[in-house]
View (cartoon, rainbow, N blue to C red):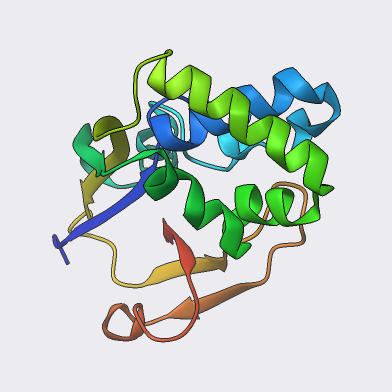
Length: 174
């Protein structure tokens, strides 16, 4: 009782310059891919985590932005992770025909370097963090398995001491 619950998520909407730059370039070349852009992932926009915490019954809810610099030695240092099929952006790159992949790479290089010679550069990465205090009168937490919006909830009661075992969960106070 009266403990704190905290969480954070990358701000895929605007705060992850690495990905925002990538998806803006991809959508400019192929508007049909706008639907797989991470900007619509749950809880990644300002205020969404805090609203969820309040709806769950947590008190003293605070949300803040955590910003770090992501430093790259060169454009290839930025580009090469996309070639490993990691995350939606990497999967998108892996599925592109070689000619389209090269077009995307050139567009990104021009956007990031702006015609300057290749070299080190920095992009910002922002996460949204929230914390809230469990009300004193509440004793158990009701958790719901994480799901994309529209997916079926699978509720279960979990004693607070077991909350962090197993899969990712959204938390609601009961």
